[in-house]
Image (cartoon, rainbow, N blue to C red; front, side):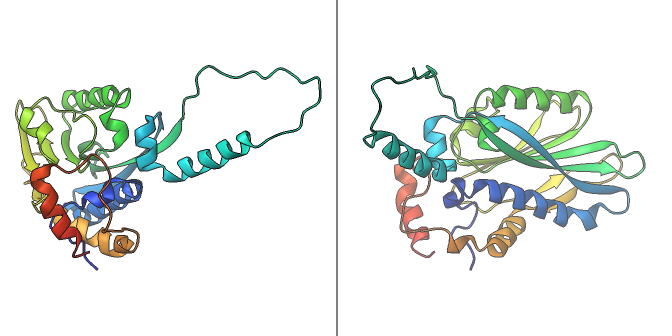
Length: 257
């Protein structure tokens, strides 16, 4: 069953996102592979990052953690018989949740030298809040300095976007392309109502760009993963809240799911 939304499905921005992220990267690599032959290849790059999400992010991305916390809290509140003499309890003044987040990107490399030509980054929550945001900005700068094309795909409404342009911060989703050594960025601001675009993936001159059909990639993973069986479209999408001007449209689309 296809998603009831013509573009990105906002219901996938919650606990399903890590699965969506990995599958989308894999599908993008699969779509590009035959178009890159014989001079280039598409490879998956998987990084494991330490993540310290805030409480509200844990409730969105890690609902099982909240269930475990509730059970443990109930257990600690149960009456316990103790002896007259008890050992002192050492309690830390601060408890910080730490998770390991796997972030998958797509690398386009030339076959002759195995040199990095282009990177396709799918932004995750860890990229859109500190300290991960600063690390991501540093990584972007390294790509630019080394002459690597960068295609960025942001399909998450929450978090801080790595662009200072007001139009890109205000829109629901963004796809942005920075070509190697270029002082301009090509951008596709996307509303909830917009289908995902077909965008260029640059290679080395004089080779032409190859097209990447993001809509096809997304619809393919939605069907293969059977996300419709895991989503309750009768509920509201994960935070942040939908804007009032889009709320009725989202409710209408969700009713088709």
